[in-house]
Image (cartoon, helix red, strand yellow):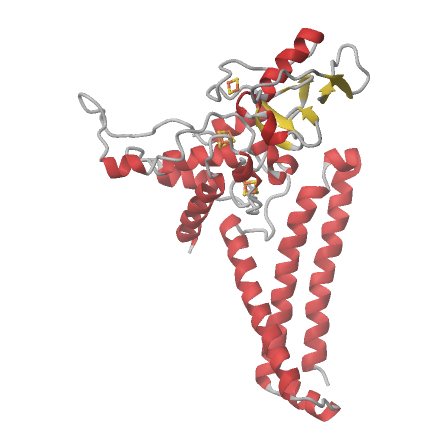
Length: 128
Length: 234
Ligand code: SF4
Ligand code: SF4
Ligand code: FES
């Protein structure tokens, strides 16, 4: 069998293959879906939301862990998605010779945002 | 009827352009788009396109008609013409050689990448490799592909990454050999496809299904391969 030629854009996570990217995408969307449902039911149950109700809710260990889990899922999900979009639309046939730098800066920005989101949410949820 | 056709002769034209023809369509029967091309060629012999069998078997006259890919020879005017106007362009996403003729090299390269032949390491039997009727049935809807490229050139994932994503046609053929009970290279075939592009770049848009002139369903075949890859990975 013929050897594959090297990809310029390899995969979303350095060691991952197509199957794991695909699975991560599905699992993270399940996490995000259930997080959204949890928040929705919180808003439905508590008609009036005061600072006290809000902090009590997010102060529980469960919600802290769930919130961090959700933002990690959002970052991973977003990263794979943005990585794929960049691989489709930031290419030589759209940008000519500057496609490489354009794609690299775009991916760098996406990675930075993904990490910052996680960092900030961890600080907000666990910091005092 | 007004027919507008894509013209480009790289030796003479600075850039492609659309040329309009007014065509008398003989009444009485529903012409095929290929008949229209033949009528145009009588008016202007420089109009260039590929065709051979004129009955939907050879796959050489894939073109884009009023925005949809298909075989000119088996696409009746009644099916594509809207408001007495027909726009014919080459298949999208492949380099144009001249007028409606595209360079299929990338498409064939992707076909070659999936090793489109039976691989079986066992000693060949005296007569032939037998297959039960049930196993043979698994190849229905796969082997009929005529490599016309209508599907792959309708697929956005193929447009953007033709060198990495194999495309619906090649993947339908990949599954044709994976599903074949006589083929013993399933594992090697899957290993070649596990990267994030070859198969996983399919986003299930299903343009391929909507254009295939043979009524095949590459998306379903891709789904089978993907499930096998997922099972293999976990
Ligand atoms: S279903 Fe997959 S292969 Fe078919 S057109 Fe969509 S992305 Fe392409
Ligand atoms: S799957 Fe259908 S559209 Fe695609 S190459 Fe084969 S016959 Fe043509
Ligand atoms: S001419 Fe052979 S498929 Fe149309």
